[in-house]
Length: 351
Image 1 (tube, rainbow, N blue to C red):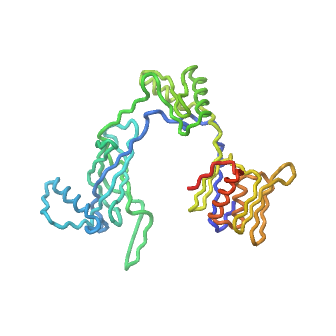
Image 2 (cartoon, rainbow, N blue to C red):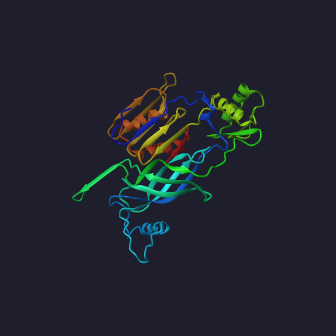
Image 3 (tube, helix red, strand yellow):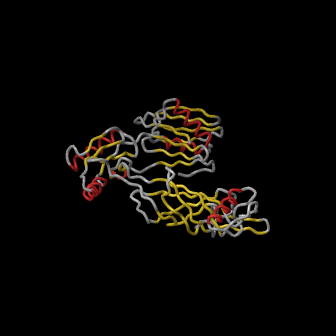
């Protein structure tokens, strides 16, 4: 599709969403989930690009506290200039089945006014979970995927310099027990609640692994009878997650980003015969009498007309709007009007 400089962009999802998919793409095993961790620390060794004492006083306080813990007594009232130090937040995701001593990646983000974290080193800092317990310790050199330079009042920067990453920079110190189900059952949780998909998953499991192996609790949760022995249960889950299931046809949905003019839709979206007038644009969808095939006509004040003789779906409407130079605001307004008239057979979401 050729896009005009109006900023409108159409993304049509052409993949066959109704093709068979393995269960592991449709559901997760209950209890098998990551846990978010967060922490606070100091990045040192910066080349004058750290926080300022006036606008980030907490950095100086953290430096004094750190030095005191290391046995260096800082006299009260001493002014600390942290231009080579930056206060940062640390975020990480504790994966399921993580064991003590395993490494984990850490994302480091400045919370002060540091200009860059490039070349800095994170001092040892704890990572805590939602319960306040320490689950990992982080330390290491910060890798920043960007570059910046300045001279004579002129500066240039590529990507963000205030966010970096430490690959394998944290060591797990506390484990989170992960139970593969309770008793003789494990739970499958569908990523999208749908009664048809849940029923098809149950039928596929019972057909492959035996009758009464699985049962649906609701449109999202499915209980599956599994062996008690851990080794046999893992083997059972390996077989279970690769069972192919044909998910239910997706509901028609259109997502419009009013800021960028992007339109994303799936294959189920269609438009019934309708006519809409908006500003200097006129949209008409109707039948041409030849086998019931509808036409899409767009008219503007410049008398430009675009005719699409094929099936009137939303993709054709958006293509026609692009051809006459509709703005993102025009597109959003027209789609809302078509939806309000009951002609847009889809869930319209504006983000």
